[in-house]
Length: 134
Image (cartoon, rainbow, N blue to C red; front, side):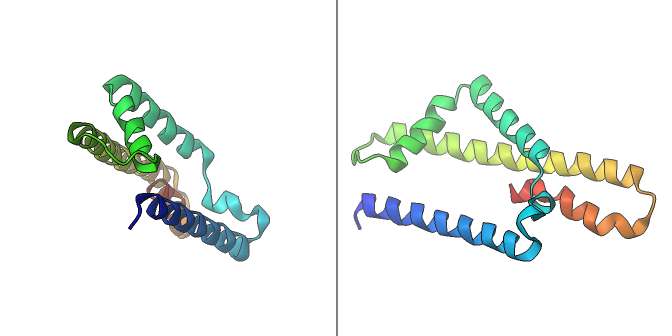
């Protein structure tokens, strides 16, 4: 299969998935219901820590190179360049999951410490695990 067609199909599939998620959120809780599913503070922390990790570890170039390899029309790439891009992407995947775990643990600690009514634990835990969804 042509690499360009595969990239176009992947992009369209991701776009369709995003539209499906957005329409489900709007359908379930209305236009103003995004506050239930979106926490900009945690998302901002995660993006900031990810960017700082890319800058301070020196793999930012390889990380961006991985996206260039995936979405460019260039068919021939050296094996070393491909391996470096793969290593950078897998390293950043681990960093993002570590960030999500740490954010959830910090939030869970705060929720359990300040909880007055035990019936509120369900919604609080639902909001706490949003970082894994990001």
